[in-house]
Image 1 (cartoon, rainbow, N blue to C red):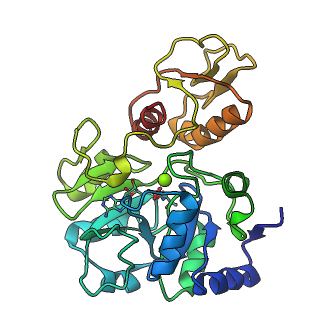
Image 2: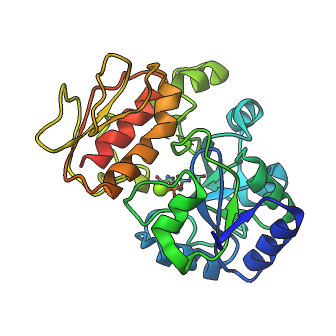
Length: 313
Ligand code: TXA
Ligand code: MG
């Protein structure tokens, strides 16, 4: 595929040059693939919103290599440092207070007083971040409200020739977006992910609640419909409706053509990794309806259920 570039010294320099011109590329992360632009540049950030058709009030996550640049952009406390030490680089996004003299484009955080920051772990994106003198604003590389991509070809699917450079970092090993924790206030999970509120609570030595269940919309990305394949979905189903695709979990199912197993071994991590891939496949096969069995609501299963619920809205 002509727009997909392997992770090499030459290609990283090419990516760097494109970003320095305030243009947009697609990049791998361990959670999902993203669209990346210079977070200090209004022009870059606006281009990201346009490409994604994303509402301007839904802020982006700014991705850093380490704390060097972050220090100038955000304020952080001991809680942040404890979590940073344990979970970063990795699939955890922190909401912090933005510094007044921060260079982050005001469009990146939708003019809020806070910014979301993350330190991704994927090797290719880390090598790229290390070369840059600015952090990258990186939302998931899908048209707004759709399913996130987990490999380069998914990005081609979403944007065709509009994204001319896709850095290949293999398949995303987690497959679901990062956990988002608000640290600008009392620590609270705004979006569940691979790192659970229990794991975070252990490090902070206090109970950290998931916002799920609360009516409050604190994170603009908690918009109701999201992560959607654009097909009606019914959750907690025992069987498939007429002509529907059927997403199952575990080994007790006798598989038929319309059935898609997230994990035969009842492994929730494997199911998380497969979820978006399966949703994309079902969409390509032009099913008009999807049934999904009940998925255990523990560990990363909480994040799977969060995405399924939003996708079914
Ligand atoms: O795993 C991930 O986080 C991926 C990869 C590419 O890093 N990125 C991602 O970005 O999922 P995006 O833009 O699709 O989702 C960002 C989420 C949204 O729900 C957004 O509302 C929330 O983070 N967010 C960003 N800034 C925020 C802020 N200042 N306060 C509250 N929520 C914020
Ligand atoms: Mg997204």
